[in-house]
Length: 268
Image 1 (cartoon, helix red, strand yellow):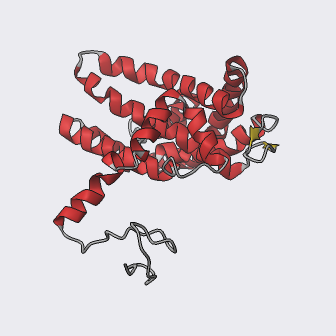
Image 2 (cartoon, helix red, strand yellow):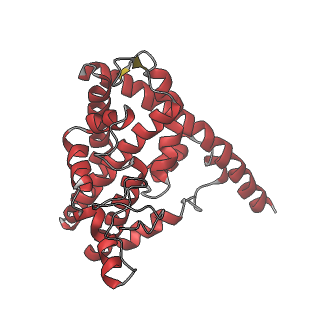
Image 3 (cartoon, one colour):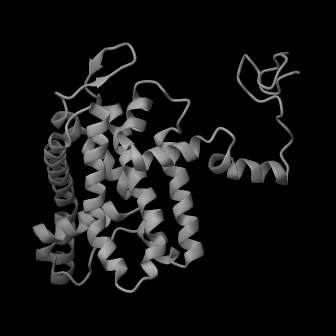
């Protein structure tokens, strides 16, 4: 065989030089459909395995990836994109895609609020809720803001590497951990979509979802760092509190000038 990727001559199913499959064909409709569904039903079962472990042992999948066991699972950002696509498809099929796509592309500033109220704590906390519930950019924004607080709060908790060395997570590893938590939240959202058709269930799920997500964060860090659940709960509460504070300060820098501009418009 001659590898179509690097030109290497070899025998077998995969090129030993670059790893490309020997069965690489011209791009046709069959290949396009195969590539589209391969992550979900591929022979390596990485997507199925990753989704399963997200629910039953989120901290184990994060730890395995961070310490170097990366062939068994998808990259967390890649996993998030696949889950986001699945969420969009299921939302469309179930007829609830309108609110999803609106939330993806907009940040809501309530035009009926008096300009002086833009800097109020209640308004800022409401904006944090709007951002965190957004499936496309909201979770990534929250993940970015949570890196520094979580790194600092969990600085005395180590992750044991393959070589036996125990080290705290650096900022990039902490961001990847938050991405896994975002994947868990998105996977839970997909499972909860059919429940939205039950009368009154939508409001109940909206109220309960932050608490469910917080519980998974406790489990994730407990498994990741091998600490007790109660300790993980305390540290998570502190870290999320600092994250909310950090996001609030950032929002104040945005909404206060916005309120001032609205006030000047009214005066004008």
